[in-house]
Image 1: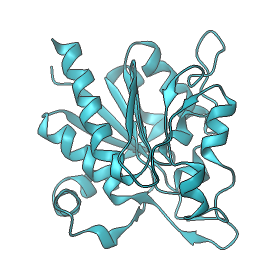
Image 2 (image 1 turned 135 degrees about the vertical axis):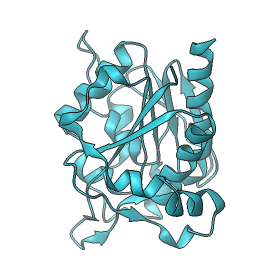
Image 3 (image 1 turned 135 degrees about the horizontal axis):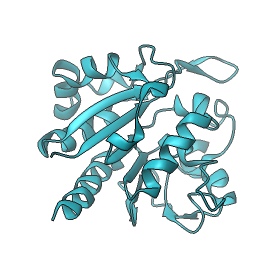
Amino acid sequence: MKPKILIIVSNASSIGSGNRRTGTFLSEVAHPYEEFSKADYQIDFASLTGETPYLDALNLANDPDNLKFLTGTGWSDMQKGVQLSDVNSDEYDAVFIPGGLAPMVDMPEAPLLKKLIAEVYERNGVIGAVCHGPVSLLNVKLSDGSYLVHGKNITSFTTEEEDNYAREDVPFDLQIALTEQGAIFHAAEPWSANSLVDENLVTGQNPASAKGVGEKIVAILESKKA
C-alpha cells in the first residue's frame, strides 16, 4: 500500500492586535505537496475546525510548484479538508504541518492536535513541520511524560527572522519556546534553506526550506518501505 500523509493546516486568517492578514504560506504547503505527489502518496488534509482554511503569499503564484498546487488538486483538496476530530491517526504514515503565521494563532495548545502528533510519532510515523509550523510541536508530550522536542535537533522560523518579519504580531518567540522545552535548535542564515532530520522528526526553518522538508519526509518513508 502507498504511504498516507496527513497535512494539517491552520484555520486562522488574522494575527496580532493589528489583525494582520495571514493563512498557510503558499510555498510551504505547495512544495512539500509536490514532493508527496511525485512519490505517488495518498495526501489528505485536515484542519482544527474543518472550516475552509486561508492561503497567504499568493503573490508567489508564479512559482511552478505553487501554480500547480493552485490550479491542480492541491488547493481544492485543502479546501475540502476534514475536521481534525474526525481523523483516525492510525491511518497515517506521516503528518506534515506547513507554516505561515496562522499556526501561531491556533496551534500552540490545541490538545487534539498534540495528541494526534504524539500518537503518530510513537508508532514510528514521521512528523514534519516548516517555518512557523513547528509551533504544533510545542507542548506535545509523549507517553513517558517528556516533551516530544526534548533533546531533538530541530529548526523553525528563527528569532532573527522574526525580528525582521512579524515581531509585533506574534504572541511569542518560537525559537525560544522550542528551546525552553529542550529542543536543540539549529539556526542557519536568515531566509536560507535549512531542513533537518532527527530520527522520524523533520523540520524546516522558513519558506526556502519547505521543499527540503518534503524531500526528507519522502526519503524516510521510502527507507521504511525498503
